Image 1 (cartoon, rainbow, N blue to C red):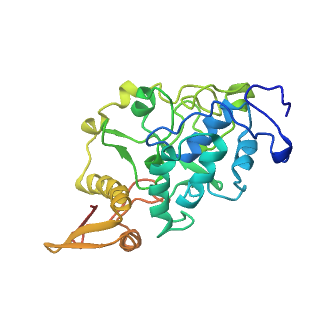
Image 2: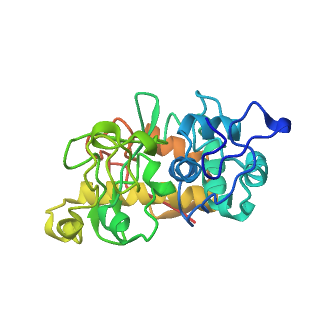
Image 3: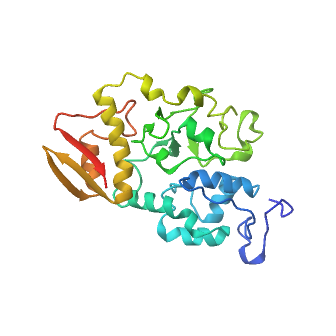
Amino acid sequence: MSSSQPYLHKNSDNAKHPLSALVGVPKMEMFESPASWICQAALSQGATREEFAEFLGLRKQDDPDLAFVAGSIGEFAVRCGVPRAHFEFASYMFGGLASIDPNGERFLSEYQRAARYRYCPVCLHDSKVKHFMVHWRFSAWRYCPDHDCLMVDACKHCGEYITLPTDMLKGGFGGYGIASLDYCMACGHRLSSHWKQALGEMHRLHLGFAEKTAYAYGRAVLAAIYHRRVRYINNGMYHNVGLKFLINFDELGLIPNKDSEFPSFSSANGTYAGGG
């Protein structure tokens, strides 16, 4: 990579990295996922995702979200010249998950060993800086409570799953690049083009008790990770237990997971879960 490219600078102290003294790295949005931020940070430097990931010290086999744990974000912040605080929410959430699911095999979505994301088309449309959020990576998160709509599994135009981080320099139809994460990496169409149709669609769906409870359990997973506790009611009794108890709910089939084409669960034992 030529040092004449904007924002890319080489020096003798860090010769193995084409990126060394970074300028203009974007901040991580409040609830943005690390995988989403890596895409935008790499684009800001005119770099590929592989080059930027190498600069951060990430290996190809590393999960891009789980890599942003508390022990790493200080170094990432220094290398990129951004405040550590920008990484803290993502680090807190993925750090909590890692305490019970170190590799994300149980609770995170993936496709062909890449981090897979669902998305809310209304959130994506409304955001000033287009980005993918932390909770969109979780298999259990199947609807957006802010806009009362289902999470979208794939691009509505071409059917491709959303996997991140992606190389925005080579994205879109013909590989000419995409300027925003609101565009599909495969076909280049807007991912949020149907946001008006999606807004409030939960009210128009005839969901049964099973479906509604499954969606509620999905939200409960994120609440539990945030509070580091699982609160649940069983036979009229309140229980407040450690975060590892989420695994019990998953093994009982109460939580939508990566194998669920549609959320499934059993209500036979009268158990209702939540975080807090």
